[in-house]
Every structure is written in structure tokens, then in C-alpha cells.
Amino acid sequence: MDYKILVEKAYDAMTYAYVPYSKFKVGAALLTKSGKVFTGCNVESASLGATNCAERTAVYKAISEGYREFEAIAIVSSGRDFTYPCGICRQVLVEFGKDIDIIVAKDYDYEVYKIDDLLPRSFTGIDIK
Image (tube, rainbow, N blue to C red):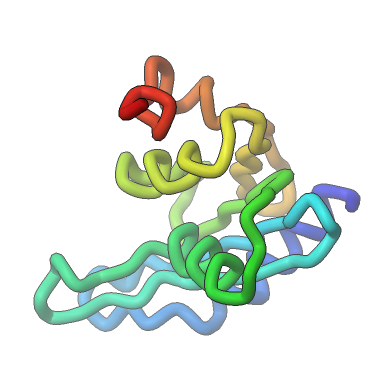
């Protein structure tokens, strides 16, 4: 899939963000290796620990429908610059492989990283065995 299309899907998802506190909208579009796309937005809560990021929303939706192999995720926000996944989202993404492309976009200009670039020396299931 053309990453520009994935970025568009992330922008579409961002419109659903529930952000009454920060007003900082984030959207994500996760591409599975089979070509299916799952989208997510951030959802805030007055109890900030209960807030969920757009990236994890997309991953959890995919997992809940039986998908475990991911090719890429596009991340966009209402901020002025590229928005990168937070540490928790990086940890969740690396759980499913170090070869996932992380696409950060702003105004349809984008950069692509591997999750291993953003979370070097990560702790994964291999470390537990």
C-alpha cells in the first residue's frame, strides 16, 4: 500500500479523537501484512492513566480481530510537527516485530523509521525465554 494512503487514513481517524483536556488530536492507521488497515484515535479520560493513544487503539483493534503481523503504522496529529509514538506505544509495537515501519506525518509530508530505530535495545518476549 502506498504510505500516502495510510497517512490519509490516519488523518481520517484523527477526526474521531476524544481530547477534551489536551485538545491534542492523534490518529493512526495500522497496516497488517495481509493488507488490512485498522485505524485508531486517542481517547482521553479525566483519570489520565486511563487515556489511550491512537497507536494502541489501532493495534488493539487489530489484535481483537485476530491479526498479529504488521507491516506499518502511520501516525498524525493536530500538533505543529511530526508526532512520534510514546514509550508505551513503542513497547506495544515492538511486541509484534522490529521490522514494522513507523510513518510519522505532518501535512502529508512523512518520514519512515523502523520501530528498532525508535526503541533500540528493546525488551521483548525473546528476553523472557
